Length: 267
Ligand code: KIV
Image (cartoon, rainbow, N blue to C red):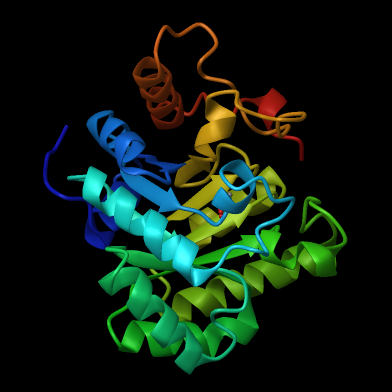
């Protein structure tokens, strides 16, 4: 395993070589250290922390202060992995607001990249951020920050019109300068097509094994679900004696394409 810090270039090279990228959410320094040592390439300081750490029903209450704090904790714990921090709800409503918010996540939070949820309306924002040197990860499919508009956590892109819209948005965001794309809860065939058609790496969650990489919420991987676990996740702690062994097993399963399996690919 290379010890060189993971960069955007590393991720693009992994895609070019057909090697899958391993990503997990992470919210503190201890887990950052453990995941980094296990060779996880990308640590996502997701606003899912609003649900798994703070106990909220959605990610909507998460603030820029929360994200900056947790990003800084993760940045202090890692040595090699790339750190992506989510821009939380309504902190990127205009390109200028996005710049100010991204500055906090990168300068105070130590993030290497910021993630934002949404399609073509965000093209000017992605362009503005990237022109100013901010690497951007786009996020399409199920957009958790829009849960109240979507009417629930549902798979997206299951009909021809919405799948075409996701394809179109993916290309528009790449053209605007996004370096990475997360596709959440979309049909596997759609995710595989988009991964093949884009030059930037596509990281899937609930999107089948045909993406360039996978991400899971760390707590799902460890079986720490208050209710029913998501249909696309796997408890890797089952059958493994330690958290480190579970994370290593996840990384191996992503890299050899055995995660997600058919049973973890609802559509
Ligand atoms: O907030 C988060 O953890 C995310 C992942 C589910 C991709 O956005």
